Length: 563
Image (cartoon, rainbow, N blue to C red; front, side, top):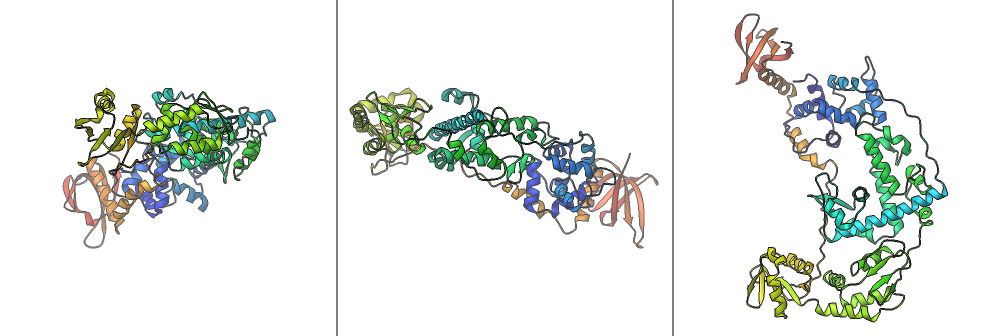
């Protein structure tokens, strides 16, 4: 057992739950680790792999502090001690544990970095950055709208699956957009699915300026400590060596730089747009300068006889979102294009729209009125909608009924609907699957299905599976920390002595024990530990060549000797 674990265990026990939880997060400790007490925690944190993770998390400034602290006869001031203790690199005796010193000695020295400065972007570079920010916000909205209908599939690494990328025709920036959405709290992975959070709806309905400000601010707040500067960030040129002892950091810094370019706070020629300066220095995100370089959003469009809709500019997000719910969106350029189809209108009806609500909305936003072909399409689709009624039956299952017997027969023999287990009983079909699932399956198979309640009243159902609220940082360690504290007894010395003896017995180690004698004196014995139990330590006394049994309560200290 490491002789350095005891002082570190005392330091860990004295830390607050928040400090200890943050240390466990930095060291990437699993919340279900089988530690029994702080001695277990200290030993685990002194293992080489854990120390390596801790060193990798050090910022350039913290790495310098630790490198100075491990020098022979180095003095550690109070401020430095607080930093090193929070990182698990200082024990209760104010010393850096030997395993940490060894690990630091194997690292390359921390080189100083000249203070970098951002170069203001040229007008042409700013225009390019503004265009990229516009494209990023629009592409992210498209991705969120796709995930709003049904969660997107993820692979084990957390990236979007190839199938999803092909289905949605996503480019190489898809996973960068996914990362921006997750940093902004708009979506997050849940069981290999990428789901929207409740805040995504508010973001989708906001203007471009509000959308961009939310993304840029969240990006800044999510930056690692090594590249933060107060409430802002360090010049991007200094990012590559911000965590000097993390071999994976350069690649991570490059990815963050790519995200900065996508968000328009960094140009491709490595200069800084005017609107990024306030963010970098800790100010509020202001999109006014950025907005001046972009097309103006519009709130009207042209409805045409060929069932298409053309907006003479980018449509306001709230209007665009609603229009997409009843059309097929065919472009995302500055001139947006939409097309009405029977399927798209039927989907809007399933989502809760009605013939009247759609007609009222279209009349409000149209510059050319509502063409007769479009009126006819909406009226015809609405009249057919609800021909198939899906609702609960008397047994707790689901029933499907329709006034059109031929349509019901077609549903009964449809091979694509076999997983629903539909069984014909009289003039209805029954299933054990939930009514909502059956209704969506029928709609996907292009049947005019409507979900109804027990009174045959239509229910608007939206197929949106939102991500549950994320746990607050450190909360996942609450039960672990509580368990360790519950095992922290009043006599820590006796508990530590017991652990040392048990470890010595397991290793059949040669130990030197100091034993309290009945007359108040002490005696040192060198034993080859062989067993412990019943409150007694057994071992062979090498000097006398006899087996001895010593009461553990009489042992004052133990020291493991070299064999």
